[in-house]
Image (cartoon, rainbow, N blue to C red; front, side, top):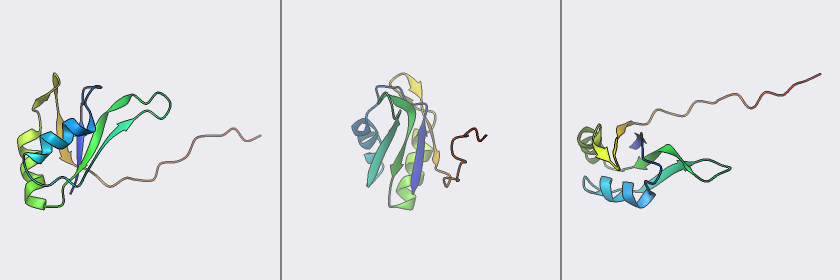
Amino acid sequence: MNIYVGNLAYRTTEDDLRQLFAQYGEVSSVKVITDRDTGQSKGFGFVDMPNQSEAEAAINNLNETDLGGRNLRVNEARPRTDRPGPRRNRF
């Protein structure tokens, strides 16, 4: 299951998330989303857990818990929808 983790403190690392979620089961990947230009965290990320029941336990236990002084928002990630590209002036 792909899990969305929001409201992250900007200093939260992928290792921090891996350790937090590993308490509930196997973690296959972790990604903190960063700004393309500055490299700074955008305050959210994704955790992949292959076992459905472990992932659900992590969501239920970690949602609204404190990490780095911020209450996490944890839920199943929604599928990514196609967004329109940048607008270009066409004359």
